[in-house]
Amino acid sequence: MTTIPTITTDRLVLRAPTQADVPAFAAFYASDAAKYVGGPMTEPETWRYTCQVIGHWALRGYGRWIVTLKDSDAPIGLVGLHNPLDWPEPEVGWCIWSGTGKGYATEAGRASRAYAYETLGWSTVVSMIGVGNEASVRVATALGAVREKNHSHPHLGTMMVYRHPSPEALS
Image (cartoon, rainbow, N blue to C red; front, side, top):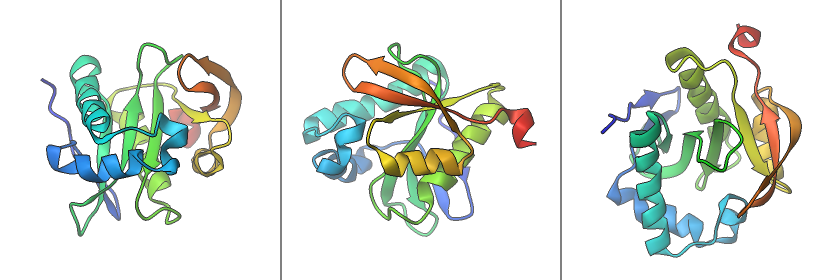
């Protein structure tokens, strides 16, 4: 099993998912806010999804983190690196369910992308964004990503592919 590293930013902690995170994660996935990321889901479905998030770390050696504020261990989102078999290439993605509009997705997305470039040695990364998810588009563009093309996902439908600046371009 891969050890999931913890990343700390100015305001956030990105850490491994735990069983205690499932109720907050499930509350988000039961809401309409989850429509762009595969929701809605029931709590048992969200529990299985949490297991999938952890399993991604074991199979790929990287994955997504639960996001918390530095002064609280309460989960506010899921952010990180994702590359399932039906994705065109590895992505950095974000899903903040508590405290939206405060720049948490951008801050956590930047930290995740830095991990991909600096720790994993990636030379490129994309973000896959559902059509109509303007909040996620704002995060991608704040991170310097540019819309490149569309991807037809068998379950999620049309996804916009945003390409992030290379490590060299960010230097």
